[in-house]
Image (cartoon, rainbow, N blue to C red; front, side):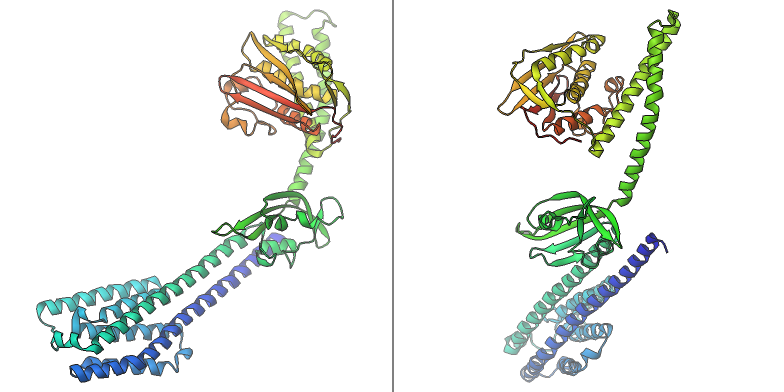
Length: 553
């Protein structure tokens, strides 16, 4: 059986078990509700029946009081047997007794009696214990009964059996009325409590089903670090104790630092994302990406921490295969393309004689496109080195002023091609960096070439240097159309290019800025920008002065 099939079988069993657990929980809630009503009414019958007897003595014996005696006796007798009844039987008997109280009272005394209360309460009880259809049917029956009784009194077919003044002057009438109102209030409260408990249990069940269906392992721990909840995926991925996973630093046998675990950080109120973790499962290491997020109550108190774990082993493997494939293809293409570009350069340099104008035009197009392909391949290879942390740096003490002047001179030909002029403001001579001049040249070339491409003809690209306490800032300002707001957030992502036609027509790989940002950050600096549509853009390169702190691939 495949792992995916096993996972589906486990989920199916989990759902079945969870559904059975919910049904048992709802059954228990309904039994508790019905039992509490039955116990309460049995106790009240001991009070209500004597009241009915007193009323019979004071106002004259009515058939209604015989019904009260029968119902009271039923509640008291049922008290000794209700634990053996099914929930359907309990609910049906309760509703039947409510109607045996409500209908005779309403027919005898009309709306001045409390009988209407009992009919309405029966609908609430049905809503808690039975399906909605049963409660609606009972509500319709209640409405029809009230209308029929009202019609009977209006038409004179029904009438009060005794003087209303004598009835209302009787203290037991008011005692019974107050008692019934208290009972009604109690039933309403119990209905709300039981209904909310059922609703909460159902909601929790649905929530857990949704979470259990996720392929992500989710673990919730209380503020005291005690386990609160973990889904099936977490147990499959992290083992029997998902709140205490045995994690390792990726690529080593070193245990993952306890203080950096996502649950610990979440319970400290921190949000984190970790992608350098591995879990050992059945003797095999699995690459894990984990998140930690704190959870708060309505009062803003930190009460739990959520940890999310995802197995990214297959993704890592695919990335390795993809990178290997791209690297192999790029290396295999670079050699013949370099030869083609060199051969085209020789032909265009008249090494084989002066080509005809039409042939030269075609050769120039081929030479330009071969150059673009070489640039694309080099960018792809550089991007792979960046992602793998293998980009090499040859660091040296670098005097900024002469290096920057020389770098701009090397790029003047590109600027003239786009009818743009580079202008460098004076730079003090005593500014020194500890950097790789070739890699910084790669950054500068990329930003200056972009500035030249996107500036209008006869424009000037300004390059200035500003000195701060512990770093130097190189600013490159163009007068182009600026960067769209929606593109600003992704401009440093690999293969990011604006979709506007005036940008696309310049071509490019969409890798230059991403590579440049990585190079600057490897030097301990920052690459950032400011831009407004129609007003151009300014890119800033912040580099530490004389810093020897650099990650060398």
